[in-house]
Amino acid sequence: MKNIAVIGAGTMGNGIAHTFAQSGFKVNLIDISQTALDKAIATISKNLDRMVAKEKITESDKTNTLSNISTFTDIATGVKNVELVVEAATENIDLKLKIFKTIDEATSSEVILASNTSSISITKIASVTSRPDKVIGMHFMNPVPVMKLVEIIRGYSTSDEVTSIVMELSKKLGKEPVEVNDYPGFVANRILMPMINEAIITLHESVAGVEEIDTVMKLGMAHPMGPLQLADFIGLDVCLSILNVLYEGFGNPKYAPCPLLVNMVTAGKLGVKSGEGFYSWTHGTKDLIVSSQFK
Image (cartoon, rainbow, N blue to C red; front, side):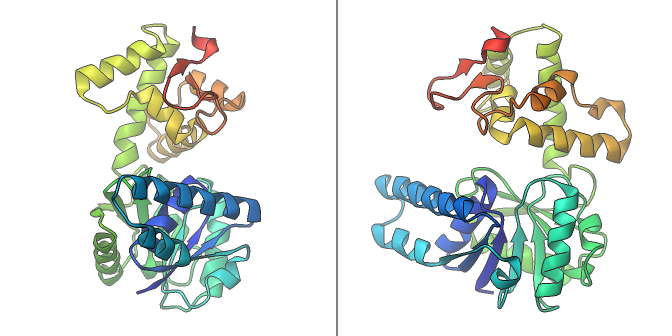
């Protein structure tokens, strides 16, 4: 397997493309927006420059990595002659089902179709294809080039052979794959999102402030960053989407999103991507400034 297509040029998509390309794979990066594709290539180049500066790779490695990536604005064209497609579009079930219908029709029946979904059922995604045995989840962590974990999600019909291939492929990327079964939130977000939601509830109920909550979790629980800062990095809209999947999937009120989270997303306060969430990100990420609404 040497030819890969990645659908979606956002944060996760460009990170996945970067990782595959740096490992020697030929990558077709696909997005309907040429602007998004140009931004993705610029981001990958910038991240490679950081690695060169830290002497983790050479200038030649950077050049080879970038030469391994081609960009496309049409899915059917971009997935021709590949052995694996990794979908990394927005966490929206209708969009993902539409994409998987398209790539199922545009690729050979032997091509493995993977989703980077962080919570949506692989079984549901596979149901719109003619090859449910070849549909699997590859949930990378952000930032993809740095984080070691890949959550490998088996749908109800995913074959042992495909699971084995994707597990070994992940290892070739220098990752640590962990196989899990297809239930709402899988493992990572089934555990993480209720914690983030509880931190937001704690803020909503005025138990403590933003910095205080994050400091307790960093210093008391040895977390590298607090749950509210992490939520800003993930995107509050993504957190809300995942919590809704958990709530609807399990029907348990413990997964119900905090009203404060719902209001912030409705108001467009999405975290880093919008410039403001629990923290203000307009001046970069070095100095955390608590958002004015929480002062």
